Image (cartoon, rainbow, N blue to C red; front, side, top):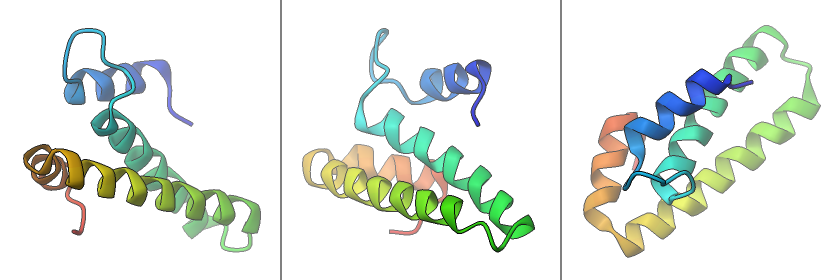
Length: 88
């Protein structure tokens, strides 16, 4: 689970403007962090199928947001993929 401090740090790194909390870049960064944490959990607990389903939902949501960002703002997409070290 992401703490308030971690969320605010992620938002401040990826926001477009001062009051931005829900842009595609911010959502992708938040999902990436949650995916990393849940992946670590599943390595320790391989039989936790409920969490595995949640992980798959988060991965597909991030994939859809990345496709949207690539279609709308390809330059921002390239920067974000490089910054988060994601596969294209």
